[in-house]
Image 1: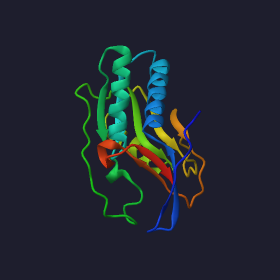
Image 2: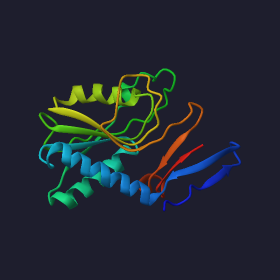
Image 3: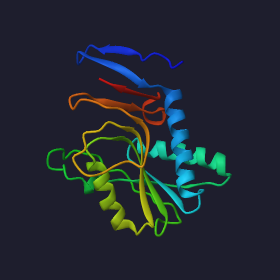
Length: 189
């Protein structure tokens, strides 16, 4: 039987925050995504995981660990910064740039899986595709996200989703990961 969702009221915003995924749920979702990637790719050959900053990077590393445990071989992992490719720099000019680090094997003719925490409007993924085009020519590009909350503004769809989470536009979905935030959970408020 699934654990009941935890509800907490945030006094600063007067919003009710509800936990929709805990650490075990996140681990199970990443395990499922890992197996789906292996099945669709027919193994880990020529697979490259590129985590989008900030929380996509630890998610990509976790997926790579799970794939390596199943396949017995390491999977190439990199980091992709899309800051300068975003279309909202005028309205949010204070974004901190991160590093882009491709695996030594590169991305040309590889199956590149973009990994992110939340898929919302699709604009971050559009920026990632633009950044990717400047870095090389993958054989295929796929998208894996922990949470798909809907409300697309662009025709972008995830190939692998940990949790579909229908939400209102006014709601906020927050992903917290141990590597960045000290805990693993997904909340909606």
